Image (cartoon, rainbow, N blue to C red; front, side, top):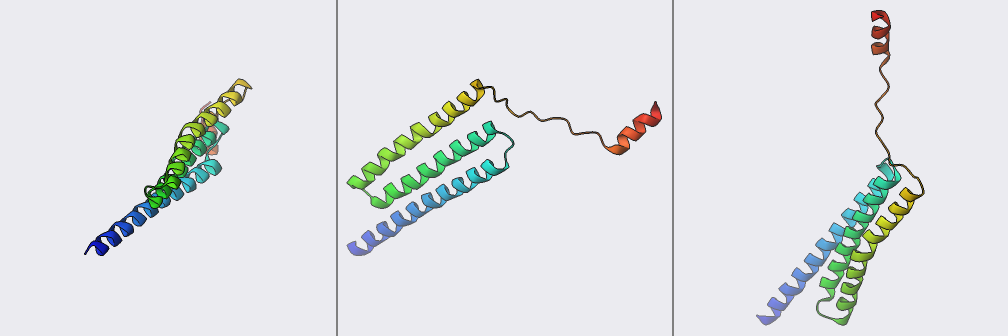
Length: 125
């Protein structure tokens, strides 16, 4: 009876750890997609820092859960705290340095008029 309860707790712990790892992988993929698809440096930096922070923290939390109450789990939680503090701070510092160097944010420009619209305007004049 006690052995089956311990096995159930072990399985549940591993499932929760795997769920956090999958969530972390998802955020890494979303961050990479944002890095490739977004228009300018600031948007890309935002996507990369936010998603990498969430992804790495989710994976580290999953690893800490997998390790249960041990010294390794404590070290993983310290890494979790360091990533949670340092990654957004570095992203902000990099974006601020780029802005101070004169890198302008992307602005959406109105699309060029269609050929038919310019022909209608020319006929109206």
